[in-house]
Length: 625
Image 1 (tube, rainbow, N blue to C red):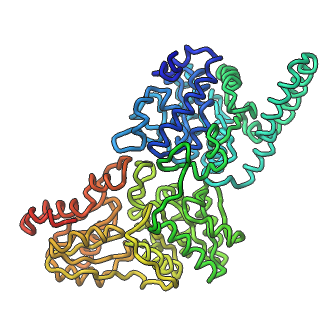
Image 2 (cartoon, rainbow, N blue to C red; image 1 turned 45 degrees about the vertical axis):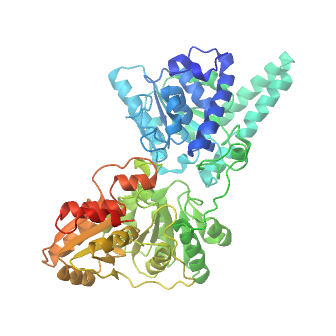
C-alpha cells in the first residue's frame, strides 16, 4: 500500500484524504521530519510540535488562495513537505537548497517571509484588509507562538486587529516555550488560562470515561461549555476584541480540523488557543527541547552527542567574561531578549540570578530597560544577536545614545551566519551603529581579543558594541585577568612595503595568510569607531595602496569610515574596500559562502590583484594556503 505522504504533492491532494487517515499521515510526516533533520541539521523540536496543526490548516483552508503566515517560520518544515517540497527536504538550509524559513520566492504557499518573531499578526491583518478592500473571500491566518507574544509588535497588531472588521484568524501555538524557557507575566497568564495542557488532557480523559454513559457525557459537555463561556469572557484576547476559542489539544488532528472548519466560516477577528508540545513524538526532544531546538546532524537512535571540539567559541568567551566581570563588579547586570543559551548566559543566570534578566522576545524593551538601569548607576550588558539589535534601533538612538548612557552591547552572530540565511545575517551592525553619536564599535579579531575588548567596552562611560562571529575562532589562548586594551587604538601586526591591509575583525587571519605573497603591511584596526587616526595617518603616508577588510557590508561600513577619515585628513590614496556587497547573502555552509563572497585569503588576493594587476602576478595565488 502506498504511503499517504507519497500521495501528496500539494495541499489539494491532502484535502482528498479522509479524516480517518489524517492521524496516520501525521505519523508519517513526523517520521519524515526525524529522517530529514537528523541528516541535515536544522530546527527540530519546534517542527515536531506543529505536525498536526500544519495538516489541519492545509486540510481546511484553500491554500495558497487562503493565506497562512507562520510566525518566526522555523516550524514550517511540515508545511514545506506538504506543499510540494518533500523531495528537496534533504537540501534544507544547504547552499542552493530550501530555506529553513518561509520565503515568498521559494513557493506560492509561503505567503509571507518570516524569520524574526512577532510579525505574523501584522502581516495577516494586512492581507485580511486587502481581501476586504478587494471584495475577496480568501482567509488570512497567523500562527504565533507563546514566546513571540512577548514582543510589543504582536500586541500592537492584536490591538489593531481586534478593533477591525477584518476576517482574520490568529492561532496561538502554546507550547510553553520559545527557545529559552518562557518568562514573564503573559506566560503565567496562559498557564492559568484553563490550565493549558491540563484542560486538554482532562477533557480527553473525561470524554473517554463518560462517553459510555451518554446522559453523564451530555451533562459534562453542558458544564464544560458554561465554564468555557465564563472564562472566555474574561480573557485578554476577548477584551482586545477577538472571539476566543480554546484551549484545544494541538495534537488531536481531527479536533483541530473540526475547530478550524467552524472558525473558517466565522466573521471578524478570531483567536484560537492551541496547546502543543515541542519535540512531540521524539522522546529525547520532548525531554530536552532546548538542545533539540536547532541541532546539527545526529543519529536518531542515539540522539544529539555533545561536540568534541576543543576550540572555545566566541559565545563561550563572552559567557565566561560576563561571569568574571560580574564577580568583580556588583554593578554589572546581564540582559538577554530570550536567548540565554544562544548568547552563552546559562552560567551567569545560575551564579547571579538577581542580576540576570531574560525579558522575552522584546528587543526594544531590553535596550530601554538597560538604559533605565544605567541611569541609576548600574552597568548593564545586553547580550543580543547582531540581527536582533536591528529591531531596537530607535531605542538604541533615543534611549541610550542620546542620553549618553554606558551600556555594553555584546553582538553575537556578527558577520555571516550560514544556514539561517539572510534574515539572520549580521553584517549591517557596523554601518548602522557607527553613525550614531556617543557610540563606539569594537571588532575583535580573535577570542582573547574579544575578552579584552569586552573589558575595554565595560570601562567606558558611553555605549559600546562589541561584535563577534558565530562559532570558534583560531584557537588563541585566553588570558585569565580582565585587563582591557587601550580604547580606540589599532595594532601593527605585520610590516610590509607599499600595500597595507587594514583589518576589522576576524578576517585579520585571512589577511595574514595572503600578506607574505603581497609583501603587505597588516594592521589590526580593532575599532570601527573611533578609528585610530594616528595609525591611519602613518599608514596612509607610508603606503601607496590601502585595502580595508571587514565581515560587514561595504556600504557604510568600516571601509567607508576609513575613506571618510582620509578625506578629512586631505590624504589622497588608492583604497580598495573589501566586504559584503550591496546584496542579501544566501544560506549555506559558512566556509563555502565566505569563498563565494571572496572573503577567504585567496579571494582577498584576487580582489587586490584585480584592482592593481601590476602589483602582484597572479602566479602567486598558489602560495596562499
